[in-house]
Amino acid sequence: MCYTIKQTFLIPPMNDEVTVETSVKVKHTKEEKLPRPLTSFYDVTNKELTLQELIDKSDQLFRNYHCSISQSANLFKITEAQNISPLWFEHRKGRITASKAHEVLTLRPTTNPNKLIMRISGYNSYDLSKKEAIKWGLEKEAITRDTYIQYMEKNHSNFECKLSGLKISEQNYFLGASADGVISCSCCGRGTLEIKCPHKHKDKSSMDAAKEDPTFCLDTQLHLKNNHKYYTQIQFQMFVYDTDYCDFVVMTSPNDVILLAIVRICRDPEFCNTLISKCTYFVKELLIPELLTRKLLHDYKVANTSVNDVTKREILLV
Image (cartoon, rainbow, N blue to C red):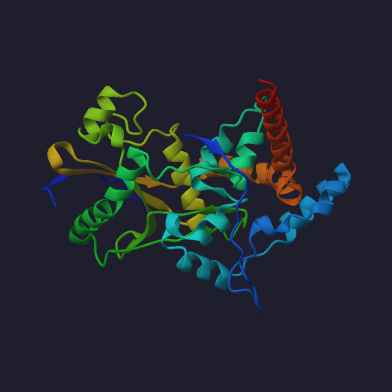
């Protein structure tokens, strides 16, 4: 059974740039310890395939690509460091992950999907580490998790929270997620943890943020809005981890006091079915053909080379 938790409590102080693709070489021996990276299915000869041949080859890859339980477990363990793990980055490439799921869900038929395909394929590189909002969120994640654990240990039987690496869905190997923790207790069973530390609202309570900012993820009842990207992220995450609930934790720190809003989100089967159906279509029809051919990456390089050549000629003519 999934119970809704709304708990707010105080604890005393305790630019987008597109780059060429980079990849990490991964050695595979015997029964590979790790899944085969999706980027490794590229072959220059695939560019010569007819449309029907490419459709057939894409369908074949979707049906035949496999990730064993031991491979998935090894990847999950070895990528616990998440964004400082090269393998975490490598195995996210070519997979729809929880943070991208909302973009796939809300993609309109009239919208060109190429930019999204390129981001999921790992062609776009963003240096977010120096951005104040990202830096603040990363710095506060650990203390938020520790504070959450302290609260849960006092209110749940045999509560545990373990770090999580990249989890590959057992139902669709082209989908993956990285929760901020895998949680369990005798009373509620197994779930996931998702932490948000919004820098924009760091100096106010979640309730005040909800009242003042219509774009804030929580409403004034401290419910997660079901049209917000975080709702999609969490539902996708629960599908990948095969859990029935997620504790969504929002941390702010007005006056240097840690304030947590803990919201338990239950799995929404109808929403998940729609979401996973759309993600599966995106994978089969749009993503896998790009993994095989890298056509968009090639076209991007050609376009930018042409622009650079024109610029160079103009400079020489001045």
